[in-house]
Length: 327
Image (cartoon, rainbow, N blue to C red; front, side, top):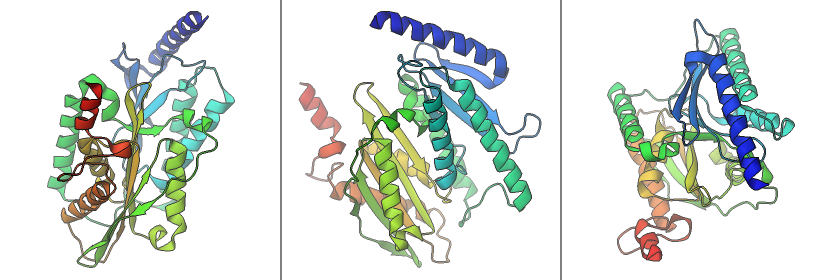
């Protein structure tokens, strides 16, 4: 029976992909057909788009009967953060729950398009600029980040899931009784009246990520920080892939850099939030240094990575330890 279900799911996926390709034309493309990875560009307006998302879709073998698709978001949408991201995530979860066992991609794509249209109309009525930040972004630094991202993309062809930022997996709604993970706080660092402080929590589900964020924002000082930048990585043992995401919270490119740090350190099942209280003096590139240093220090203090003679423990086991275990 299981083999028949798998075959039915595969045929349903083939039918759905053919339909989407026909509907969206050049906006739909195949990244890796064997791994069931596809990409689609979604805009609020076909002729003069103001807001555009480039999404990567990964279809698990159990989709659509028993598992949702996974959607990944390019780093090129730093404006999608905080309440807006949560709103979109919840909307997609509701759509999936209302259509369990059915093909959902078309409904998701059109819901995202509606979200972009609503955002465009809201920006027009408020007279707001399309991007906002409390600190000037150094053009050369931004170009460097884009080059780093492109190199990361090219070097990750064998595991393309990890070059995209996870936005939502509705499978997380199956977890109902998670407890709030313990949250650790790092030592604050102050430079030219700007203060940075890292917070860390072990996480294994997306619900726990939301719980940690909610708990941190209950603290008025943290909630009133100019930026609360975060990144997390959750390891899926059965699929041997990572669910990962990042948030700039107005500090352009900071979330992507923080996630890149977690990837380089090869940590897993952990979330790091770095709060910044802006002191009125622009720090330029030094702000990224402080954000990443605070994050790295708390990861070392909590034994998620190696420092000197300390080996990684708990969720952040090192490559060296895993290799020994494999032997």
